[in-house]
Length: 273
Ligand code: NDP
Ligand code: OXD
Image (cartoon, rainbow, N blue to C red; front, side):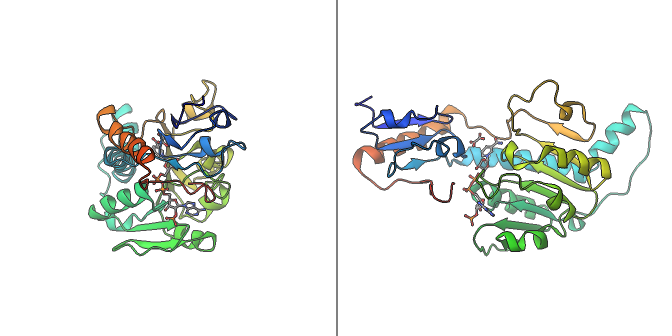
Protein backbone atom coordinates (compact mmCIF):
# COMPACT_ATOMS: atom_id res chain seq x y z
CA UNK A 1 0.00 0.00 0.00
CA UNK A 2 2.87 2.45 0.64
CA UNK A 3 3.83 2.28 -3.03
CA UNK A 4 0.42 3.15 -4.40
CA UNK A 5 0.12 6.69 -5.76
CA UNK A 6 -2.96 6.52 -7.96
CA UNK A 7 -6.11 4.45 -7.65
CA UNK A 8 -8.52 3.60 -10.44
CA UNK A 9 -11.93 2.75 -9.06
CA UNK A 10 -15.71 3.18 -9.24
CA UNK A 11 -17.28 1.62 -6.16
CA UNK A 12 -14.45 1.26 -3.62
CA UNK A 13 -15.08 -0.41 -0.25
CA UNK A 14 -15.58 2.13 2.56
CA UNK A 15 -12.39 3.07 4.41
CA UNK A 16 -9.99 1.61 1.85
CA UNK A 17 -8.44 4.91 0.70
CA UNK A 18 -6.85 5.71 4.03
CA UNK A 19 -4.76 2.54 3.72
CA UNK A 20 -2.62 4.25 1.05
CA UNK A 21 -0.43 6.86 2.78
CA UNK A 22 1.19 8.15 -0.43
CA UNK A 23 -1.93 8.48 -2.54
CA UNK A 24 -1.73 11.39 -4.99
CA UNK A 25 -4.99 10.93 -6.86
CA UNK A 26 -8.14 8.86 -7.34
CA UNK A 27 -9.39 8.26 -10.87
CA UNK A 28 -13.02 7.31 -11.25
CA UNK A 29 -13.96 4.82 -13.96
CA UNK A 30 -17.37 6.46 -14.04
CA UNK A 31 -18.76 9.93 -14.63
CA UNK A 32 -20.72 9.73 -11.37
CA UNK A 33 -18.54 9.70 -8.25
CA UNK A 34 -21.02 9.37 -5.41
CA UNK A 35 -19.70 5.91 -4.46
CA UNK A 36 -16.22 7.36 -3.93
CA UNK A 37 -17.41 10.45 -2.07
CA UNK A 38 -19.60 8.49 0.38
CA UNK A 39 -16.49 7.31 2.28
CA UNK A 40 -16.24 9.39 5.49
CA UNK A 41 -12.53 8.49 5.72
CA UNK A 42 -11.72 9.74 2.23
CA UNK A 43 -8.33 11.48 2.50
CA UNK A 44 -8.64 15.27 2.27
CA UNK A 45 -6.68 17.03 -0.47
CA UNK A 46 -6.36 13.95 -2.69
CA UNK A 47 -7.93 15.00 -6.01
CA UNK A 48 -10.60 12.85 -7.64
CA UNK A 49 -10.67 12.84 -11.42
CA UNK A 50 -13.75 11.57 -13.25
CA UNK A 51 -14.20 10.25 -16.76
CA UNK A 52 -15.27 12.74 -19.38
CA UNK A 53 -14.94 11.25 -22.82
CA UNK A 54 -16.66 11.99 -26.17
CA UNK A 55 -17.82 8.41 -26.81
CA UNK A 56 -19.43 8.23 -23.36
CA UNK A 57 -21.21 11.50 -24.05
CA UNK A 58 -22.47 10.68 -27.55
CA UNK A 59 -23.75 7.27 -26.54
CA UNK A 60 -25.71 8.82 -23.70
CA UNK A 61 -27.25 11.30 -26.12
CA UNK A 62 -28.10 8.42 -28.48
CA UNK A 63 -29.98 6.65 -25.68
CA UNK A 64 -31.91 9.80 -24.79
CA UNK A 65 -32.82 10.49 -28.43
CA UNK A 66 -34.12 6.95 -28.77
CA UNK A 67 -36.24 7.24 -25.62
CA UNK A 68 -37.60 10.68 -26.55
CA UNK A 69 -38.45 9.66 -30.11
CA UNK A 70 -40.15 6.45 -29.01
CA UNK A 71 -42.44 8.51 -26.78
CA UNK A 72 -42.89 11.36 -29.24
CA UNK A 73 -43.64 9.09 -32.25
CA UNK A 74 -46.18 7.03 -30.25
CA UNK A 75 -44.16 3.80 -30.43
CA UNK A 76 -45.95 2.43 -27.37
CA UNK A 77 -49.42 2.97 -28.86
CA UNK A 78 -48.38 1.31 -32.13
CA UNK A 79 -46.92 -1.65 -30.22
CA UNK A 80 -50.30 -2.12 -28.56
CA UNK A 81 -52.06 -1.75 -31.91
CA UNK A 82 -49.78 -4.33 -33.51
CA UNK A 83 -50.45 -6.86 -30.75
CA UNK A 84 -54.17 -6.40 -31.40
CA UNK A 85 -53.71 -6.49 -35.23
CA UNK A 86 -55.34 -3.08 -35.19
CA UNK A 87 -54.70 -0.61 -38.06
CA UNK A 88 -55.15 3.00 -36.94
CA UNK A 89 -53.01 5.91 -38.11
CA UNK A 90 -52.71 8.49 -35.31
CA UNK A 91 -52.15 12.19 -36.01
CA UNK A 92 -48.42 12.98 -36.19
CA UNK A 93 -47.35 15.18 -33.28
CA UNK A 94 -45.30 18.35 -33.86
CA UNK A 95 -41.82 18.44 -32.33
CA UNK A 96 -42.42 22.09 -31.54
CA UNK A 97 -45.26 21.06 -29.19
CA UNK A 98 -43.06 18.66 -27.19
CA UNK A 99 -40.90 20.63 -24.75
CA UNK A 100 -38.13 18.57 -23.21
CA UNK A 101 -36.77 19.36 -19.76
CA UNK A 102 -33.24 18.31 -18.91
CA UNK A 103 -32.26 18.27 -15.25
CA UNK A 104 -28.49 18.76 -15.25
CA UNK A 105 -26.78 20.81 -17.96
CA UNK A 106 -23.31 19.40 -17.44
CA UNK A 107 -21.21 17.40 -19.89
CA UNK A 108 -23.99 14.92 -20.68
CA UNK A 109 -27.05 17.14 -20.25
CA UNK A 110 -25.69 19.92 -22.46
CA UNK A 111 -24.88 17.50 -25.30
CA UNK A 112 -28.33 15.90 -25.20
CA UNK A 113 -29.91 19.38 -25.09
CA UNK A 114 -28.07 20.58 -28.19
CA UNK A 115 -28.83 17.46 -30.26
CA UNK A 116 -32.51 17.40 -29.28
CA UNK A 117 -32.67 21.09 -30.15
CA UNK A 118 -31.44 20.40 -33.67
CA UNK A 119 -34.39 18.03 -34.14
CA UNK A 120 -36.72 20.93 -33.38
CA UNK A 121 -37.74 20.14 -29.80
CA UNK A 122 -38.03 23.17 -27.50
CA UNK A 123 -35.55 22.56 -24.68
CA UNK A 124 -35.56 23.68 -21.08
CA UNK A 125 -32.55 22.94 -18.89
CA UNK A 126 -32.06 23.16 -15.15
CA UNK A 127 -28.76 23.44 -13.34
CA UNK A 128 -27.36 24.55 -9.98
CA UNK A 129 -25.73 27.72 -11.29
CA UNK A 130 -27.06 30.10 -13.98
CA UNK A 131 -26.31 29.24 -17.61
CA UNK A 132 -26.67 30.94 -20.94
CA UNK A 133 -26.87 28.41 -23.77
CA UNK A 134 -27.96 29.50 -27.21
CA UNK A 135 -31.45 28.22 -28.04
CA UNK A 136 -32.01 26.56 -24.66
CA UNK A 137 -34.27 28.06 -21.99
CA UNK A 138 -32.11 27.86 -18.90
CA UNK A 139 -33.31 27.70 -15.30
CA UNK A 140 -31.33 27.22 -12.13
CA UNK A 141 -31.65 26.56 -8.44
CA UNK A 142 -34.52 25.09 -6.40
CA UNK A 143 -36.65 28.23 -6.82
CA UNK A 144 -36.83 27.84 -10.60
CA UNK A 145 -37.40 24.09 -10.79
CA UNK A 146 -41.20 24.19 -10.95
CA UNK A 147 -41.17 26.98 -13.51
CA UNK A 148 -38.82 24.88 -15.63
CA UNK A 149 -41.07 21.82 -15.34
CA UNK A 150 -44.30 23.66 -16.11
CA UNK A 151 -44.07 23.05 -19.88
CA UNK A 152 -42.05 19.83 -20.02
CA UNK A 153 -43.76 16.93 -21.81
CA UNK A 154 -40.59 14.88 -21.32
CA UNK A 155 -38.27 15.08 -18.34
CA UNK A 156 -34.71 13.74 -18.56
CA UNK A 157 -32.67 13.35 -15.37
CA UNK A 158 -28.92 13.81 -15.83
CA UNK A 159 -28.05 15.10 -12.38
CA UNK A 160 -25.25 13.79 -10.19
CA UNK A 161 -26.43 12.04 -7.03
CA UNK A 162 -25.93 14.44 -4.11
CA UNK A 163 -27.90 15.15 -0.93
CA UNK A 164 -29.67 17.97 -2.84
CA UNK A 165 -30.72 15.80 -5.80
CA UNK A 166 -31.58 12.51 -4.06
CA UNK A 167 -35.33 11.84 -4.42
CA UNK A 168 -35.82 14.81 -6.77
CA UNK A 169 -37.98 12.74 -9.14
CA UNK A 170 -40.96 12.72 -6.83
CA UNK A 171 -44.70 13.42 -6.68
CA UNK A 172 -44.20 17.19 -6.49
CA UNK A 173 -41.90 17.21 -9.50
CA UNK A 174 -44.28 15.08 -11.58
CA UNK A 175 -47.24 17.26 -10.57
CA UNK A 176 -45.43 20.36 -11.81
CA UNK A 177 -45.31 18.87 -15.33
CA UNK A 178 -48.24 18.94 -17.78
CA UNK A 179 -50.44 15.82 -17.43
CA UNK A 180 -49.40 12.79 -19.46
CA UNK A 181 -45.66 13.53 -19.47
CA UNK A 182 -42.81 11.06 -19.87
CA UNK A 183 -39.84 10.46 -17.56
CA UNK A 184 -36.37 9.36 -18.63
CA UNK A 185 -33.99 8.60 -15.76
CA UNK A 186 -30.44 7.92 -16.86
CA UNK A 187 -28.68 9.39 -13.82
CA UNK A 188 -29.05 7.34 -10.64
CA UNK A 189 -31.84 5.19 -9.20
CA UNK A 190 -31.78 7.16 -5.96
CA UNK A 191 -33.02 10.26 -7.77
CA UNK A 192 -36.38 8.55 -8.14
CA UNK A 193 -39.01 7.99 -5.46
CA UNK A 194 -40.30 4.72 -6.87
CA UNK A 195 -43.72 4.73 -5.19
CA UNK A 196 -44.34 8.26 -6.48
CA UNK A 197 -43.60 7.10 -10.03
CA UNK A 198 -46.06 4.22 -9.75
CA UNK A 199 -48.69 6.60 -8.36
CA UNK A 200 -48.09 9.14 -11.15
CA UNK A 201 -48.47 6.39 -13.77
CA UNK A 202 -51.67 5.13 -12.15
CA UNK A 203 -53.20 8.60 -12.06
CA UNK A 204 -52.15 9.43 -15.63
CA UNK A 205 -50.01 12.36 -14.46
CA UNK A 206 -47.19 10.53 -16.25
CA UNK A 207 -47.90 8.34 -19.26
CA UNK A 208 -44.67 6.38 -19.09
CA UNK A 209 -41.08 6.14 -17.98
CA UNK A 210 -37.82 4.89 -19.39
CA UNK A 211 -35.43 3.85 -16.62
CA UNK A 212 -31.80 2.85 -17.00
CA UNK A 213 -30.75 3.15 -13.36
CA UNK A 214 -32.21 1.79 -10.13
CA UNK A 215 -31.69 2.07 -6.38
CA UNK A 216 -30.87 -1.62 -6.35
CA UNK A 217 -28.90 -2.97 -9.30
CA UNK A 218 -29.49 -5.55 -10.66
CA UNK A 219 -33.18 -4.70 -10.29
CA UNK A 220 -34.61 -7.54 -8.15
CA UNK A 221 -36.71 -10.04 -10.10
CA UNK A 222 -39.73 -9.36 -7.90
CA UNK A 223 -39.68 -5.61 -8.52
CA UNK A 224 -43.00 -4.21 -9.86
CA UNK A 225 -41.21 -2.11 -12.51
CA UNK A 226 -40.33 -5.24 -14.53
CA UNK A 227 -43.91 -6.00 -15.49
CA UNK A 228 -45.31 -2.49 -15.58
CA UNK A 229 -46.76 -1.86 -19.06
CA UNK A 230 -45.74 1.81 -19.06
CA UNK A 231 -42.16 1.33 -17.91
CA UNK A 232 -39.22 0.57 -20.18
CA UNK A 233 -36.19 -0.89 -18.43
CA UNK A 234 -32.55 -1.16 -19.47
CA UNK A 235 -29.77 -2.50 -17.21
CA UNK A 236 -27.62 0.62 -16.64
CA UNK A 237 -26.35 0.70 -20.21
CA UNK A 238 -27.41 4.17 -21.36
CA UNK A 239 -23.75 4.69 -22.08
CA UNK A 240 -20.40 2.96 -21.67
CA UNK A 241 -16.97 3.61 -23.08
CA UNK A 242 -14.86 1.04 -24.83
CA UNK A 243 -11.30 0.43 -23.67
CA UNK A 244 -9.82 2.06 -26.76
CA UNK A 245 -11.38 5.43 -25.79
CA UNK A 246 -11.26 5.06 -22.08
CA UNK A 247 -7.55 4.45 -21.60
CA UNK A 248 -6.55 7.84 -23.00
CA UNK A 249 -8.08 10.07 -20.28
CA UNK A 250 -6.93 7.61 -17.62
CA UNK A 251 -3.32 7.53 -18.85
CA UNK A 252 -3.42 11.32 -19.18
CA UNK A 253 -4.56 11.68 -15.56
CA UNK A 254 -1.83 9.32 -14.33
CA UNK A 255 0.80 11.27 -16.28
CA UNK A 256 -0.40 14.57 -14.85
CA UNK A 257 -0.32 13.12 -11.32
CA UNK A 258 3.18 11.76 -11.86
CA UNK A 259 4.51 14.98 -13.39
CA UNK A 260 2.65 17.36 -11.11
CA UNK A 261 0.70 18.90 -14.02
CA UNK A 262 -2.82 20.35 -13.68
CA UNK A 263 -5.49 17.66 -13.78
CA UNK A 264 -8.59 17.80 -15.95
CA UNK A 265 -12.13 16.96 -14.82
CA UNK A 266 -11.42 17.19 -11.12
CA UNK A 267 -14.43 16.62 -8.87
CA UNK A 268 -15.46 19.37 -6.50
CA UNK A 269 -15.82 17.27 -3.36
CA UNK A 270 -17.79 19.95 -1.52
CA UNK A 271 -20.39 20.17 -4.28
CA UNK A 272 -20.40 16.38 -4.61
CA UNK A 273 -19.82 16.21 -8.36
P1 NDP B 1 -21.66 17.01 -14.73
O1 NDP B 1 -21.00 17.12 -13.41
O2 NDP B 1 -20.93 17.44 -15.94
O3 NDP B 1 -23.02 17.86 -14.72
C1 NDP B 1 -23.89 17.86 -13.63
C2 NDP B 1 -25.00 18.87 -13.89
O4 NDP B 1 -25.94 18.78 -12.82
C3 NDP B 1 -24.47 20.32 -13.89
O5 NDP B 1 -25.15 21.08 -14.86
C4 NDP B 1 -24.86 20.81 -12.49
O6 NDP B 1 -25.10 22.21 -12.40
C5 NDP B 1 -26.16 20.07 -12.28
N1 NDP B 1 -26.47 19.98 -10.84
C6 NDP B 1 -25.74 19.40 -9.86
N2 NDP B 1 -26.35 19.58 -8.67
C7 NDP B 1 -27.47 20.26 -8.91
C8 NDP B 1 -28.50 20.76 -8.09
N3 NDP B 1 -28.50 20.59 -6.77
N4 NDP B 1 -29.51 21.46 -8.67
C9 NDP B 1 -29.52 21.67 -10.02
N5 NDP B 1 -28.56 21.21 -10.85
C10 NDP B 1 -27.56 20.53 -10.31
O7 NDP B 1 -22.16 15.51 -14.85
P2 NDP B 1 -22.33 14.62 -16.17
O8 NDP B 1 -23.19 15.35 -17.11
O9 NDP B 1 -21.01 14.14 -16.65
O10 NDP B 1 -23.08 13.34 -15.56
C11 NDP B 1 -24.31 13.44 -14.89
C12 NDP B 1 -24.65 12.13 -14.20
O11 NDP B 1 -25.04 11.16 -15.15
C13 NDP B 1 -23.50 11.45 -13.44
O12 NDP B 1 -23.30 12.04 -12.18
C14 NDP B 1 -23.98 10.02 -13.34
O13 NDP B 1 -24.72 9.83 -12.16
C15 NDP B 1 -24.92 9.87 -14.53
N6 NDP B 1 -24.38 8.90 -15.52
C16 NDP B 1 -25.12 7.80 -15.86
C17 NDP B 1 -24.66 6.89 -16.80
C18 NDP B 1 -25.49 5.75 -17.26
O14 NDP B 1 -24.99 4.90 -18.02
N7 NDP B 1 -26.74 5.65 -16.88
C19 NDP B 1 -23.35 7.05 -17.41
C20 NDP B 1 -22.66 8.26 -17.03
C21 NDP B 1 -23.17 9.14 -16.10
P3 NDP B 1 -23.94 23.30 -12.66
O15 NDP B 1 -23.67 23.23 -14.15
O16 NDP B 1 -24.57 24.58 -12.26
O17 NDP B 1 -22.76 22.89 -11.84
C1 OXD C 1 -21.14 6.45 -14.79
C2 OXD C 1 -22.08 5.36 -15.05
O1 OXD C 1 -21.34 7.20 -13.83
O2 OXD C 1 -21.77 4.50 -15.93
O3 OXD C 1 -20.16 6.57 -15.55
O4 OXD C 1 -23.14 5.30 -14.45
